[in-house]
Image (tube, rainbow, N blue to C red; front, side, top):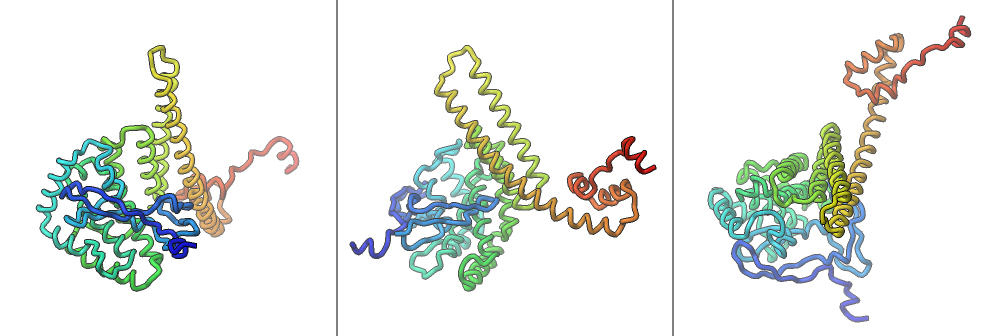
Length: 366
């Protein structure tokens, strides 16, 4: 066995990319995506279970290696952007660079924030803290770009969503070390006076992600296919569910189903059209429609499970309430439950509708 096999296969590969801000080439480490799979996810898509190839060492948390930072000007973005900048949307490199520099110059504490959050390989820093710093700095930097916050915000929305994942791990002690949690909390405390609009905590960060996803849905040129639209709508639905807003989640699902239904009718119209509509284009539309239905079905299943769990919990409390009013009539009990703001579904489970007596029942009781 060779020494490299003895030590295990490294999960990293070195890549070169050019920074869109300073236009210098840098070398970066990227995870080899073929060596791991994220097999289980939370409601908001946070990876819960990661399976690595047995020969890989070290086995790291992939979400901590999503961002790259230019070693020269410290511009920070996801690794996909570094390799293919402005692949989607209407933003150009020149406009982005100009607005980025203008935003950084206008924000009085931007240099202090950067000094606090830059990733220094020389520091003996935990992987989690390094990943958290990069995620925070990416959110801050991108939020200073005018066209990003006014509509081309799909990436910024995903950055805040990912930040929510890290803050979830922090809150639930998934960082594997109490000292890392203390260091992260100290970092956030130092950041707050420098960046007053930043609200730490998982719920607040998910709210920010939600705001930008909703804006991107109507304003971003990057959302230009039915599949992209459905993806964004379903992420919005997932965030609503994660924040325990089932009413908003249901509304979002209904809107999404309506859009997919409209797309289906468009396909039928194209299929029956006598014009020269390419069969390959029609096939692409049908494939996209199938993917949309599959994604929608996954999210509906999650919604149904959450709703069922909530209903079962509410049925128990509603039954406890009715036990205090056992002498009341059926109509009075219904009124009591409605006044306590229980839904019709819960009321129907606790108080099934009384059957009307038939002739046989009347004669029998007589």
